[in-house]
Amino acid sequence: MDHLSCDVAIIGAGTAGLAAERAARKAGAETLLIDDRFAGTTCASVGCMPSKLLIAAADAALNARKASTFGIETNTSVDGRAVMARVRKERDGFVAATLKSIEKIPAGICIRLRARFSDKTTLTLDDGRKVSAKAIVIATGSRPSVPKPFQKLGEIVLTNETIFELESLPRSIAVVGAGPLGLELAQAMARLGVETVMFDQGDRIAALRDAAVAKSVRSVLGKEFPIHLGVKLEVEKDGDAARLSWSGASSGTASFERVLVAAGRPPALHDLNLAASGLETSDKGIPKFDPSTLQCGDAPIFLAGDADAQRPVLHEASSEGAIAGRNAASFPKVRKARRAVFLSIMFTDPPLAVVGAPPSDAMVFGSASYADQGRARVEARNEGLVRVYAGADTGVIAGATLFGPGMDHIAHVFALAIERRETADTLLQLPFYHPTFEEGLKPALREICEAVKSPVLGNLDDIAPPGA
Image 1 (cartoon, rainbow, N blue to C red):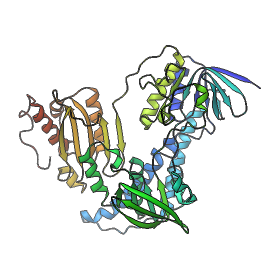
Image 2: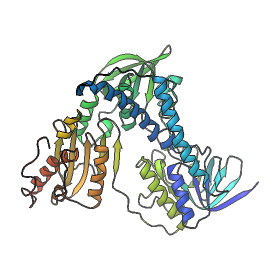
Image 3: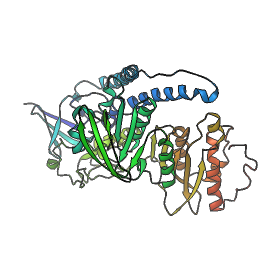
Image 4: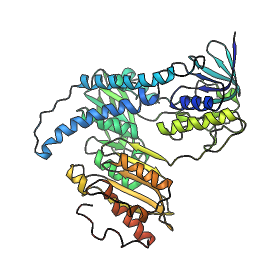
C-alpha cells in the first residue's frame, strides 16, 4: 500500500481549505488537498448563493405587490416550481464556477477520499493509505444539526442542505431557529406566499447583543410572519405533515407541511478521530486554538473556516484558510495575523448588519430611526433602527448594529471607519449626499459627538435637509 508524504495536508476542499492549499503552495510547500466529494463550497452549493436566489424571488414578489403604493396596479401570482427551478439552475452555475477553480489545482494534489488522524502528523485514508505531513490544516467546514425530536419526521424536515432541492414551494412551513439563516429563509418563504411561522427556544432574535435593535427587528419582521421566542417545542408526525405544539412565552398547536430546522451548523469534526491527534478540545469537541495564528496548541495542526466555529462567514473562512496555510507551510515558525474587523450581514429586508465590537458599558451610543428617514420614505422602506457605539473618552467608532434599508452596503463603511479608527465627528465631516440612506446615520453620529463633547459639534450641518 502506498505511503504518501507532503509538507502540508489540508482536510476539506471548501472555501477555507482551498485558500489554505493555495497559500501553502504559494509559500513553497508540497501540498495534498483531501476531500471525499470536491462538491464545491458551502456558500455556492447550500449557503450564500441559493439563499440569495430565493430571497431575490421573494423580493420580486413583494415589489410587485407593493406597486400599488406608487399608483401602479399589478396582478401577481407565484409559480413555486418556476421559483425553485431558477434557484437550482443559477445555484448550479455558481457551483460549476467553483469546481472550475478546483480543476486548476495542479495534478496529484487532490485526493477524493476521507481522512482520519492516526497521530498528530499522520492521516489514514479510506483506502488504507497513510499520509505523513509536516503540518495539517483542518478545514472540514460545518454540517446542519437536526435535534433528535425532529429526526422522527423524516423527509418532512428540511435543512439548508435540502430546502433548495424542493421541486416546488410548500403550502406551509415551520422555521425552527431565529438566527440569520432562519430569518432570511422565513421571510423569503412568507413573501412567496408560504404560510410561515418561526420558533426559537431562546429569547434573542438573531442572537443580537443590542436589545433596542433586536426589538426593532422582531417588530418589523413580525409583521410578515409570526415569531415565537422563548418557547419549548413538542413535535409529532401528523400524516404527511408535522404537528408542533409550543409553550413558554406563548403557546399553541399547528400542523405544517414542512419544518425547516435552522438551529445552527456545528463544526464537521466527528469523523476525524481527533483523539489520535492528541489535541486538547473544548467541551463541544472543538480543538483549542490561537485565533491569531490558527495553530492548535503547539501542535503542527491548524484549524480554519467554519470548523473552528468562530466566524462562520465566507470572507472569514477565506482569510482563515490563508493564515492557516501560510503558517502550516512555515511551521514551526508561525506568525500572528491581524484579523479583520468583525462584519456580519443578514440579508433580510431591511438588512441587518453587525460590525465591530458589541455594545458595552465603556461606550457611548448614538441611535437613528429609519421610520421617517427621507430616502426610506421615498422608497416606502421606512423601517429600522441604527445604533452606533464609540469610546466614551474618544468618540472613536468601535461598533454598530444596523437594521434598515441599504445597511448591507453601509456596514462596509463602518468596517472601514473602525479599521481606520475614525471618530463620530470625522465621519460627520464627510459628504452625505441628499437624499440617500447614508445621511440617515447623522443623528446617531451627532448623538455620540454630544456625549463626548466633540469640539467640532455645532460647526457641522447647522441646517439639515428634511427627513435626514
